[in-house]
Length: 301
Length: 195
Image (tube, rainbow over all chains, first blue to last red; front, side, top):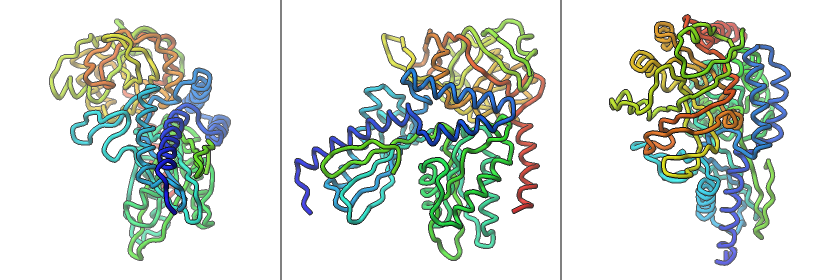
């Protein structure tokens, strides 16, 4: 198909506008599935400091709602996941431009704290943009003309708690479980528990970490479509909550809200496992953009 | 587990010594915002901080702010960052500048326990991510220094009913974080045996 200039320039504006809205929306209004998970955690927790933390979180989410403020001050690194239809009339290079410009505009106009720095000089590189920032995960969908965009502002406290181990095949699934458990115990209170533990298994080292990030972007408590992986999610979720790390690492019953796993087939000699943590303020907002430029803001896709 | 209200900066060391790990604390008065680059400048680059830190309560933060005039900022969203990155500054903050309390999220590793015990300091755990609430407890940004490090400047905030905070490490050699880790590591052995 041909893409005419008017359509693509209009869609570029639509993507920019959508990104600017998604970034701020995600930061202010956490999704209902997460609110439900936090409410259930509050009922389940029995430790005194743990209950204090979960009560404070509850109060905080309500204040963010009533005062129209950000839930957390860490506006994060803007991460987007895009599902681009084969026939969507805007090329991904321009979709990226729209996401970048929307991120920058939201940062300047709100204003939002700008976190982006050069990785050597540590000097600020702009309004939450920079070389290769924001970060976009791409998926291309055949026989479709739409675009789905999900914005995940990823805080650094939880991102710093990312771990990779190249287990060997002889370590088996037991090795995977042990590594996830030791990672979350080692992380303690640093990633703002109770959050979502994202696990990526299989593929290569880089792809396992990519999958771990994909895992934390799912609605809380959703299960992998492969029953074997879903079973591992259930098992790890239970085991992680037996560690006693508790809310903010102060000890308690609720260490994680969920454990999500994404997987890929791998080489016969590889058994990679990656862990990416998402804090309790697991911010997430999505939009569907149709080929005609109409936008439907939604939590999920 | 007692409840306390403490006003900072403190002049009487007893105010710190009465706090026990696990206690709940609400803070009044003035607190100082500090972060990685601020402390790197003080200790690694040897630049004297232009604020008095004696008896102070330091908050690990890089606030979201709006500039309203020369050297004057309004709060937008103020929250707290992970403390563990900055643990090595604990001893000199206490011994050279008389800091009495450090507040952050996620806890300090065990190396903070000894200097806090020796120097009469505490670590307060705040709820990470609960910035909307924290922002309402900061009445005003009264001073800012080292603006070129924005947002990792040295900030002075006036606070009201700041908390609830949990004493994570007290001045008597106790740490909730050490206790939790000790129990969790023992539990891991049990869990591994079940896999």
